[in-house]
Length: 330
Ligand SMILES: Cc1cc2nc3c(=O)[nH]c(=O)nc-3n(C[C@H](O)[C@H](O)[C@H](O)COP(=O)(O)OP(=O)(O)OC[C@H]3O[C@@H](n4cnc5c(N)ncnc54)[C@H](O)[C@@H]3O)c2cc1C
Image (cartoon, rainbow, N blue to C red; front, side, top):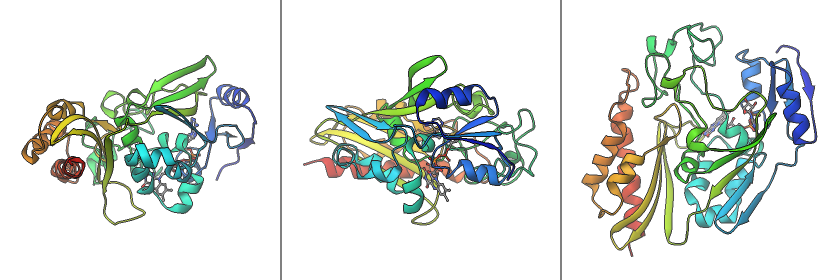
């Protein structure tokens, strides 16, 4: 590992100023992604600004809104009673990620900004990676790709956004609270990440030095039901192949309202608005569920190694819709 300067500020303004002043600086939270990238030589900042002493840990529930401090760990959020009661899909997504040890270190802010797991991105001996080095090509497209995205990608980059919890958070229109050198702003999670087909080397809209301080998460009102289904190669400690976060409000066997987002398919967590429109106000019908799934993945960009994800996404969504709508029917 290369030598670097290590800062440990105790207030947000200092942390933001320290990163903003140095183009080669990066924030360090739990370090479960950042330190791997440094050890592997993928991303070697000259200065690490450790944010773990900032007062950004904890959860506040105020009526319909939950504010999650960016340094809250994945385990802490999963254990929050409001999450178990009113956002079960968030709890399920958290507990389906990584391992208990990692979830105790990993923070919510860091989880949202984790870098892609694309094996070519994470191997600096591979030179063709538009995400790492603009205009260098995409080794995944030219070689073998499997754990890669099929939506929001093209021949320039097929990197997947691998966060599980980002998927249900996108489904409920959560927002990141961000502090930067120019002040504070809210960024809806549906607008936080940049699709690879809109800019393969830009991962998110945050400027250098902008810090996520919290995530505002609307809680589902009474009567809603939600769940997260993650399909992967093995039952635990494995990244996603395809996942579906579904929240529904049922009125008998009528779907009065719903939210859907998919993981494992997009260069960003994929909100399935068209499927929501197709199903809102309709009766439980597996054929229609499948049609909504097909509409979601229509126009997918596939490679020989990722083509299986089209049918897998449709099947995963159909199964999760059935589970949520039939169990919710009295
Ligand atoms: C073996 C393994 C398995 C995993 N499996 C899964 C899985 O199945 N599902 C899943 O979702 N995740 C998985 N992960 C990813 C893991 O959840 C992330 O590494 C973790 O959430 C990152 O959080 P952190 O606090 O350690 O972030 P760090 O590693 O400290 O930071 C990650 C990035 O975010 C930036 N950053 C951190 N906090 C902030 C902030 N508040 N504002 C602005 N920038 C910030 C850092 O500069 C860095 O670029 C796995 C990781 C490992 C190592």
